[in-house]
Image (cartoon, helix red, strand yellow):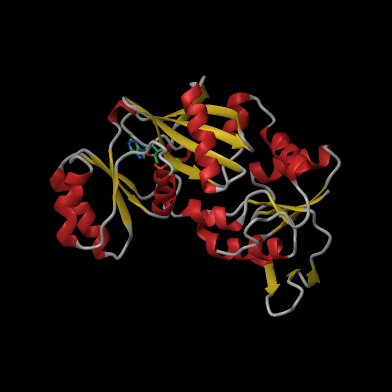
Length: 301
Ligand code: ADP
Ligand code: MG
């Protein structure tokens, strides 16, 4: 197959590994800088141009779209979909997962366990919003944050009120969430490919920190997940419409709670922790399930 990897930087670990795994399996791998792909929308035949040439002959596309370029990246991916190229994850599914609130609404509709979460617009509703998530301590999250940035733990209701007011004043959309204390600063990353969890790891926040993100100094270790956690992760990815996803789960007193579903999960932490060839499994998934004109939404909706 001829496979495009949409990525801003060919030197990133995940990009390098996908190229390496694809080439090892006999595919032609081409890294395309997402922001340098430009499109002819008006033409009856959708086209993508890149560095002065028209892109042609691709069978599949692996999107690695960073959170800061979701809008443009999804537009490029949608254009590939309209050209009949098979995406590893569809543009619509990526857009859904990038908005934390939209993602939680979709997951809740299907009865997947989630931390109690509230969302409001008016400062007048802040006191009730705080009560809705069972008071302090609580977590406040910027809707499109990533790598732990924009996630704040408020120990008291007074602190929560001021922080929420500040975000609202800045016109920054946030959600308010019950703090799962018993998780003890740890969460579980389940790496889903197709309908399987192919690798999982526990991430533990550094002392004095509640965010377990590896970018925030968290450490990863091997973990055996329960059948319930496995089912939850697979269902969450399916609800979002993602073929490949990093599903983050908190272990609470009342079972696994999905915190977020990542559509471009990093490969470095999970491959190094588990010793598994995750990149190879992603390529295998495309070999088995890829094909022309398979995008269900074709970028619609
Ligand atoms: P990001 O997209 O920035 O990674 P997350 O929602 O994943 O945002 O939150 C970052 C980290 O903060 C999580 O990995 C988890 O360790 C911690 N965390 C987030 N929400 C909660 C919560 N409701 N209860 C306990 N810990 C949380
Ligand atoms: Mg996260």
